[in-house]
Image (cartoon, rainbow, N blue to C red; front, side, top):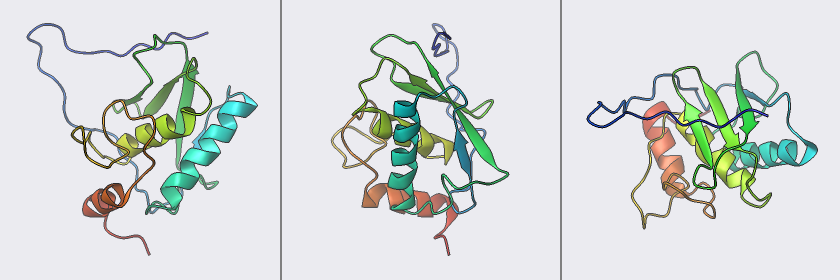
Length: 150
């Protein structure tokens, strides 16, 4: 099994706040996880459906464009991570099944270019969120970045 490693800056190191690789939510985008269990594959399907309902009609469709998810072991504090330098999503394989679709959808939000939202805001993109699905706010933020999909 792979280890889920979240790299961060050391003491005093500059923090990279730019999401380098992003994906157009209006274009078809295949989300795949070659080593996913049936439960994990179902969570990916559920997460892409959440975004299709909120302004990303191409997510989860079979297409030449793709984003890969890797399920790996991490500590309980790390749920997921979008590595925007290489365009990979890492999901902690120790998460309860009920959390998986929301954590995957959250990381897909980063892949679309969305940043974290402040605590107390009704948004999927609140850091550490495990209960809120994509909201009108998330849909509006997506439209600000990419426009409204046809």
